[in-house]
Image (cartoon, rainbow, N blue to C red):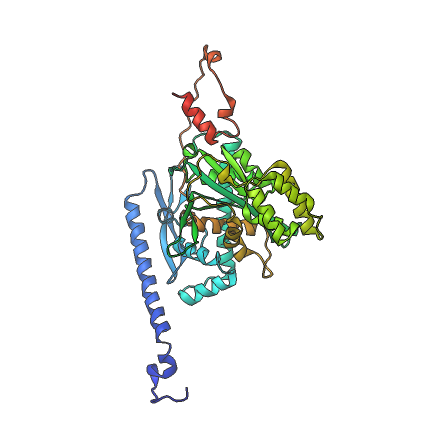
Length: 458
């Protein structure tokens, strides 16, 4: 390099000296890999002393795992359990999924990065910032594995509840009297599929609003939870209910405010969720009014609908000529249906006691951009159907801060002993017992039915 003051040779030559950070970092990583190997093998020895009864060692096996400081190769024992199945006690103890190269902690870091960046950029960033080299294919594979596992678990759960009538569902403990939910769909381009596009259905639920400090008009949602529908074994709102009621106690909810753009699948939320109040969100309503009647008349129509002044709104709509252009005509017809059905009035005017801090619904457009569109829409992106669902579910669980356990190995299921079958004695008084099929049927976890069960059990 021109302009150097002195010239040194050997290990202090300028080119070598400028690489001191990378060289020492790699040397440190080599030391950490050796320490990790020694620790893991010592842990395997300790697990041997505490192995489950009936397990026996049948040999040893090598496994390579990718860590933040490079690849570690460890020798661990292979066991046979009581049923003769091969088991790696070390892998199960540490939560290492089978046939996965990266450790769970590195896997979680990969998913956090790829949820925001592309697969290529994620692989490059990991290579630059760690001592490991993770390929684009490895990053993609981890998204598919975790996303598919989440989708399958949710689908199985929905089938158990809505088709087999499972009633011991683990409800959440957080109690609120009113819940606000909004939903919308986003269309993504597909590749190597029969269809050219797919609709990804997304919803949010929250408890209310709070002011953002030091901002006059700034508000943020309180307790927001995200849901992306990832299977076809139940309706969107049924799946969303299962996801959200793991967090909230449905028995405490007295009212649900449902908001959306008026699509039929969104409107069905008012029929599936108990004590629901339907609300056309302000964003889509205002946009339709402006498209159909123009800026000035559209603003007047919007205010009339929002405040329930139906005669005034109908007069404005009828006096306006049918607009030109497909979007404007569609908006005009949609507003006509709203006015005839008298829908669109602000929910705060239709409930008994709206909170002082309550605001109108209409945050879904911004949320769907933040949750899905910024990462998955536009810029020439196209997806397979499964790939889009899996990445969307990873993003959902990241937003909800529930991804961590899905990066680890699922707990091994221990076989339960088969129960002894005994002939059942006939119940001579069974015909006297009252039976309500709805309490055990398709919607056993509906909040209204839960309260009915509590009342009947008194």
